[in-house]
Image (spheres, rainbow, N blue to C red):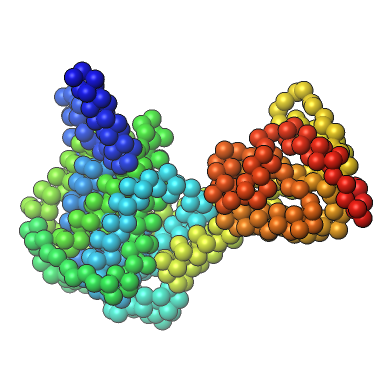
Length: 587
């Protein structure tokens, strides 16, 4: 009975281990609460209150800039922020609407309406969850830095351009969505600048810029909104010449009730139409949230579970569309505010969401009086901080390939569309990466003598004598399709000198793809048709498995696949000495 019991327990433990390894979902909230204390709760509440206050103007501004109402911006910050903290894989991440999504959200609404945005956001959430389930959290971090900088700078310039109308009080409606036509409209209407609106914008800008110089803890954006809104209210009441457009003027009275959850219709035609936009939201959300988490880890010394973070972000983006919300991701500025004010667990993020909920329920009528010119100033500062111009200058000292990726991604983002920019940028980065691998992959040819220790850290050198009629080719790098073509060309050029044995040294081949296997198969067949033996040496276990699956071992004989060059040379020398090939000249 004990054997059965222990066996059953072992099987159960194995099943649990398999399940654990299959799904990497371990929210930080639950582990943080195991060793929670009153002191930690106090610090988290303090940080959560500060972050909630800082997030308020940003949520409103991002909502308006994205083409939705301030209410939707706040709802997204409340629900999305709560979900990210509750299910996420980072202890201090603060989620909500961010500037990076303004461009893509605005374009989706312009093309497909709010219903289309809800579907695209929902689909993006599903994609993010799948990314986490398939453990792509670490892979997403390897997206080339020039691409991230390029589209972030492009987004920053696009956000800046969308705020010109409100910053200068031009009073324009139906502004073109494209960058160049938009600026054409601006230049033709600068004669209509509103001095009260411009003065409001400049004062707001000065408050935001100067507040951190007084104290880094002062939320400049919130101070600007409070001071400028109060001043605008009294100036407008006592001076007829002072008129600036407010949130209430444009959007009407703000609702103070959480929207009732609602559904949306999904069908294959809608999915196919919105899938590119959903993919862009998912990739952008994954990059920004993991970038924010990486920055936070560097400050706090903690470690983000990137797969759990993607699943948490996905759950947030699956949920918010049912309440009319816009896409959610981790916000670097709010996350850093959380850290600097003492937040160290997801409880701070949950408190931040509750603070926003209280403001939404009891202070929404006051938001109607906020001047749009003030919010334009807030967003211009956001776009400046996003631009990363110092980083761009640094990349211009990098290789030309990095500069080209940066510029292509930047201009595609600004002039065309963020979806196109990410897709083309990733494609260009992959092509350049393959080019670099091909350039750095060498194919060496040896004859007569071969130093076994060459290319290693070994101090003792063992020189092997290679018999006449034996040629040794070494592939220094992965044997994928680009290198396979390069190797094939070398083999064809070497066909004129026909050896008895060809040794292909593969000690540095970390993997081989289908094209590499195909080219190797062609080489073996053409060599055998000429009576040339092929011996493979230094084959790693994973490469050998791929060769066996392709039937290469049956073509040349499993004994011709050696794990070390010494065995391969010994076999080749023996074959060369025993083989007499009439009409063949030895090398």
